[in-house]
Length: 160
Image 1 (cartoon, rainbow, N blue to C red):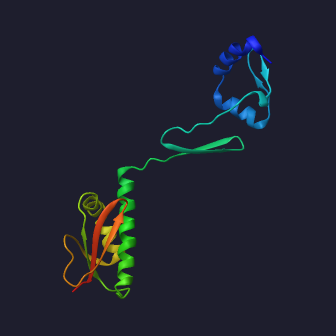
Image 2: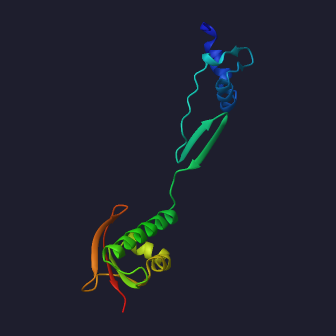
Image 3: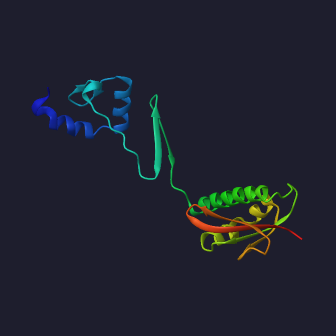
């Protein structure tokens, strides 16, 4: 339809703010350029996500949130997962809801970081008097878990 004017249209489109063009197309409005007025069905709008963000558009609005997880947030997630697993182990070991326990873990690496950063939270949520890095005590209820790719042996035993 536009024949030899296509390069001129492309140049003029490139000079216009892309979000304005996308909004006009979404609302069914003509796209007004310096020398042309394009119908919304004559313009193809492709949205592509920016690395590290998730985005959604509706009604002329776009919302983007970061999808990258910081090291601190990853450690917090691991701590919450560890609490969940220990709570399930308490139940499986038939501990009373008010029993204090000693929790042991064998995994090293990231799990040591989790305990260093969030040990108090883990102890408080699981009623663990101690979090011990090492082999579970004799008689401890143990399970092997994979926590976000980390193989870990967790053990729980009543305190005292």
